[in-house]
Image 1 (cartoon, rainbow, N blue to C red):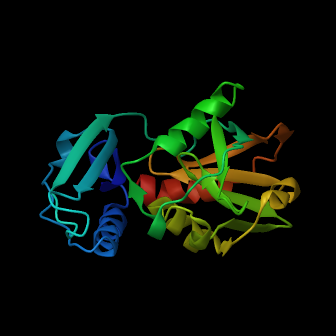
Image 2 (image 1 turned 180 degrees about the vertical axis):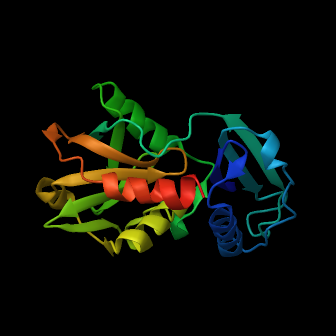
Length: 228
């Protein structure tokens, strides 16, 4: 077992690093352990991409404390804040969310959901827990605009406690709610968030065109996080 956090690095500068490390610490504590000594990186030498910090469970039986090692793996990749809008579809398979909103090394369900919608020429999938409540996207968190308000699935639904998601919640005054597929039929705009894409609009949701309504929060993310 492992838990991880992905930190965007833009031209040698980590974005929201403290927020990611705080989440990694909470995940380790929830698993009954502590964060081991983290590897040290000279971020100025990394360029642009994603730095993934992994904490492994380590040796021992099922009841042993979470007491493994910490690893940092850097991959060069495009990191954005205003990438092109996406076509998003709904995944039919029930999604079993991870407890606590942490990210674990088992991403099979996420990858399977993503692969299924890509066969229909879509870019991302929205996944729902066994009770039919929206969790988020396969590889991101999601925000919906309904009647002029912005909402996102609550952690109680199984949503991942993403650092960019948390920043958007505070910056926009958005709310966390538990809702099902009916809310998607009433939304006028939507966007996804994660470390790699920043804030990325959804142009089409399950075949229905949406307004591109997130330019203001994209610009604020650029000003306060991407370039600060």
